[in-house]
Length: 440
Ligand SMILES: *Cc1c(COP(=O)(O)O)cnc(C)c1O
Image (cartoon, rainbow, N blue to C red; front, side, top):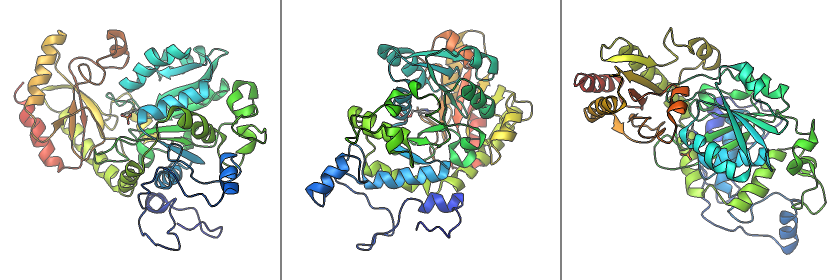
């Protein structure tokens, strides 16, 4: 898409197909090519010196960037209405690098109880090895967010739509609480995607993604992204962010990243120049290409996912074998009002049902096993956001490392079964679910 001051900003559907790529003069590849190269041609030693000194923009070595990943970064930036993004090897690495970059040495995190299991593992086990501590709060308890703040707090972290229970975050209220504490709100926007929610509109500062899920959409690659939404002022309390505000040894002029990258994104510059460069979780060109293929159909896929899931949730809510459906598109769901505010275009297709509980975890597991074994169209997989419909048992799979208390805080029991509704015919999915529920 050509950058032209006379052009109005692109709409969502245009941005998802075109942002970040203009065909070069020659050769002219109409679609973004896979730049399958681990190093990039340098015009001269002077050019090389300028690139290494951050005086010129361009790719040097693919660990910190390649042109296909750059197109993906610019496209996800456009869709999130951000200022810059970093493509990362996985969603997990995107979360980890974001937290490392903000906490520095010994910083503290305030995070929602209702998080992806891998993020809980990272916060409770791996980051404490590096002196980074987390206080978990019920994400709907705004007083708890305020009360958890310490002098060393450096970020608030939550998912815009959590899973498996599909709690919808009150982004505005949590962003206000974060800003009152002088720290950014980082949201994991994986489940909503920027099509169903643009968190920047509601005050979030940084958005992270597992692009593995709906963004790729085809279940073929692992990837992630960190998007700086450009709203947080790191210069307000410079002593909190020395990696951004003190002279950087990576920039020979002696400037800080905040000074040197004041017109783009000091935060993404830090992620790339330090964390990607030093730790190495690079997004490959072939993965970036697959993610771009996915992004080009994001809106129409999300519309189908959301519409089918809404129909299936309404059907299951009336089914005698189902004790409860956790779908915020249903009237009476605790997050129904929040969904009206934050998910105007539809509710994501990842939600859960509770089968009737026997009161005994092992007996509930056996019932879930019977139900899942009866499914022929939905597949048992540890994934979400795929074109295929997926069933998962959180307590024994994705959330099996959580303590009984953490499971309860997340609203998960052994009778809970998570669904990720794909792109198949919704009637076929309903028939499949009915057949399997009849076995209980
Ligand atoms: C899958 C997932 C992650 C981790 O992403 P990977 O791409 O698997 O590393 C993080 N957050 C959420 C909400 C996820 O669903």
